[in-house]
Image 1 (cartoon, rainbow, N blue to C red):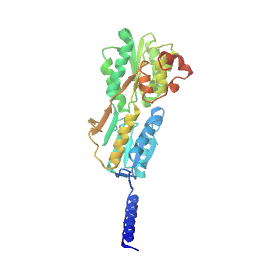
Image 2 (cartoon, helix red, strand yellow):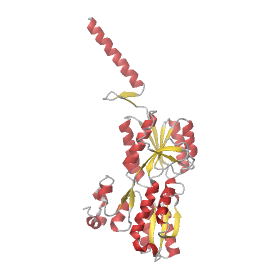
Image 3 (cartoon, rainbow, N blue to C red):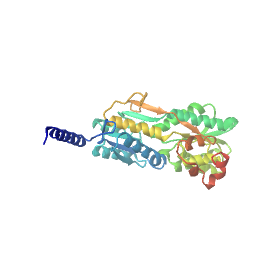
Length: 363
């Protein structure tokens, strides 16, 4: 065997050994030559499945972005089904599994604090997703929720016009355990107070549409249907229950919403709902996933990812990214929910809504 051949074999052996070390360390070499960790474990904890966004959009978008940033990363998914107790147990499970970062959309921002503290003591990072949990949270991404309420209030006033002073409105706020609901409520009040009289106002536990339906029916009985000129609804789920109550009473008044749910878009087309607030899910999901992967890799979050600092209910300062919401009405459905890929025209324009779709320029 010549010296040249022996040298080549030695080099090849060294390369194989090096690759073996890389593989066993959980780090894979990408085509560009940069190393990406393959042992990332992230827990994704979402609050419920009644609202269509979580299973249809948030979960797949987050998982997709994590895999894009860290191929082979493990994502452990949990849905709390509206139970704060279940979510606390799920955090315990995620910690026991060895998840190093939790993307947490809290059912109850207060009761989850002890779980956030437990994660922190274990060296596990927490990304608060869409709702700002209490405790030592490491980062937070959501939409400007006070702005959401402002936009809802402005849209309701615009729809009421001169009728704003001729009667009362009914307000249906969200769950008292959701800090976002308090922000929506405050934003709406900042616009509505002094401009319209509030006949009845409700907080709605668990964002339950059935509760909203009962609340609205009770308000109609107490106030009289001729007195009610409009309804503030914090989201589309509540609006669905409210709309059913209004129809049962033979009423059609301006009604707000949020989340751009498919049924809400269809109600807007036929005039049963005035507006919804669209908060594009993909940008929010992508940011949460990027935060989680960076934290899992031990990186400091760059300023462009967390340009703001917010204070949560426990007084902790949290680096944050707050996105800008969009108002959707009958005139811009095509340029918002359709253009963004939320729904196709065919999904929206089923036979029941075909005529309204044609009138709105969707078909």
